[in-house]
Image (cartoon, rainbow, N blue to C red; front, side, top):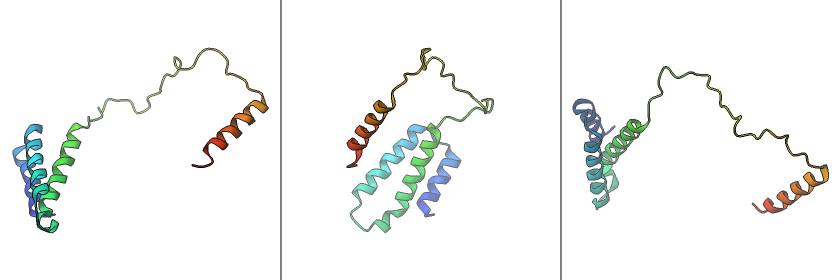
Length: 108
């Protein structure tokens, strides 16, 4: 890991910046990278620091799963399925619909 990425990690660990402070640093790094006229290797540390900070922000946005959440949650779909019996189609109707779909998607 380059010095810039290491210093970004150290900054995150020691200073514990706010989301707004991290976004400000990300904006500065993006500007530095976009305005850099030379070789990409010369600014690779800034690129790695930018990636590290963006990853940190993404991890902050993901809500933690509460430990008390039950592992075996069942979806209640009873209100999604109507109470009526399923529609019964004749075999020739099913076959024609199937063939029409095959013809529609054969060029994909």
